[in-house]
Image (tube, rainbow, N blue to C red; front, side, top):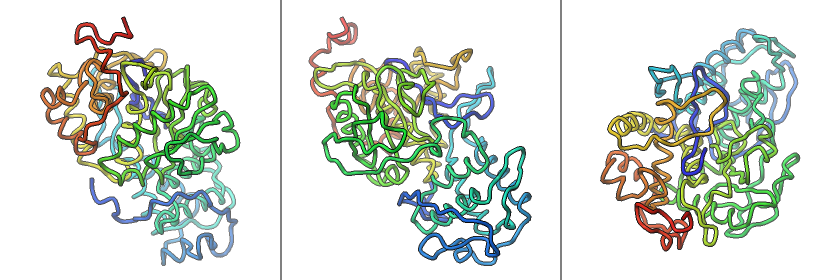
Length: 436
């Protein structure tokens, strides 16, 4: 992410890691449980009964009757194959015809849940201690943790997100990423109101000394980040979710966390090698999203340009909410709208991003950023803060189909972003006084 714009798009030639480097139907279909986050997954050991009671006497064996018992290696190979097929389902992807790079999109979390639920509810492996599957040693206790998480999600005492995290751990799939959620204990959610409190930091996350919550989202920061940054981030998240308050429950259940930093994201303990200056979104198996507190705007900390909390939270809502509820209405439309806007010269594509060495911007970056950058401009509603899509009036006039999609999910009530900054506006040609 660079100032004024942000990066939260997975752009790949092949499917890469879980970092969303800035990434429907009835949400309670088949295999419904969700909402209450839980990490209390008891370990088990092989026995004559494949699983033993771990959750209020409701075991997988009691929940799902007459499951087929399958040889362990065959079962695990099939589970891995179906899971990877869901991860790599390209139904809603966009591929640049010139570079072959891909902008990934779609309800992967929903597809994965369908795989996990169908698998655990219909079959079970023969008991084993350790099975080697494609050079990975699968341990019985890791399998049981995964399968029990599926059952717990089904009865509503854990989350679908937890099943995805444990699937990754089971097969060591992309868990080399240091920000993978399997590597870190989550923060507890404490209702703070508009007050910054001392962070209840889990082991290894002592860097975070400041903590606040709002709209189902945890916001944390180290001692060098001003309290005003946390308060500003909280205000933005509350407004952002105000039109669809049901999203807040899903964000809370999925342990959504914003990690504020100054400088680059690499100062944070979960991301030691990251040189990202703006921030990146939280995917379903990531431990948090990040945002640069120096780029936020509040009274006497004036800043014109992109807001990384708003931008990355838009991406995060895509990954943690839209993916889970199978929001196909969004996925069927967004990339077509992006291409249309870009091809008609409506969406500004002159921005730069912080990309991996050797990677150059192409159409996948523009398509992938179109939604978050446009919603960011809509929410801020400040002329000149974006090169295009900077105000609601501009979006409604120039990109009306996008405006309709934005207002399906985001508030239409007026909100004064960065109260008082308008007094510095000198017009379209000159911009803002504090930049002269």
